[in-house]
Amino acid sequence: MVLKGQYLERPALIPVGREVMEGVAHRGQVRPPLLVLSPTPEEGGGMDHVIGAELAFAAATAGHATLRFNYRGVGGSQGERGTGAALIDEAEAALTVVLENAQAPTAAVAAMHGSARVALGLRARHSGVAGLCLVSPRGVTPGELTGLGRELLVVVGELDATLPRAELARAVDAAGGTLEVVEGAGAHLHHALPIVGKQVRAWLKRLSGN
Image (cartoon, rainbow, N blue to C red; front, side, top):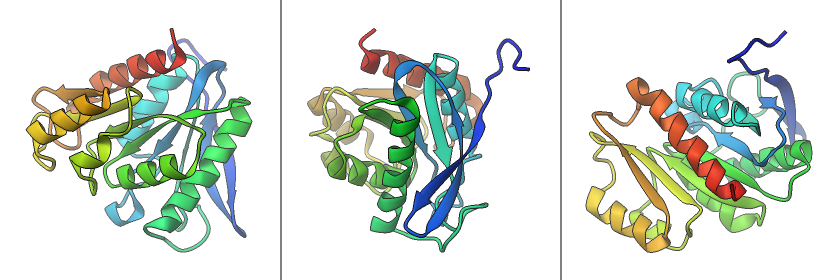
């Protein structure tokens, strides 16, 4: 039984080539569904990452279907850990599953840290990406964000100086997107998880047209 304030995630299997990745999915009726990309294997990321879990919770409690997963070679996912294009292949396989599960034409994608690069590659490859949320992005330059449109959300901690703040703000503004700076937070945003969840819920609401 699922109590008030809780949500139920079910195990999900994501085929990629001859191998299978593990994930957890939540059913929902509100579009778009949300695909969560954890930090990359090189960063030690996995589907149980606290930010990813918070984003899935925020989306699910607003009625959106969600999927988060482990890249190949992480946790119970089969295969060897990859980088670059291999991670984009894995994200694309997960996107296919979340679209099929939700019976939706497009999905929102939220990526953390180094998976920002994966999310950009996925958007360039697949027309089913409705919008991108990049949380504490790594491995990208502000200039790469300028063409992403109003569907872009970037969330960074006030104390995170990885990307030049002024340049980042200009790039997101040029795209027509939204930059959220979480006061007093660093790159990991641990003490500000509910704030990040609220920001992502508002972004999903904009994408849904409500």
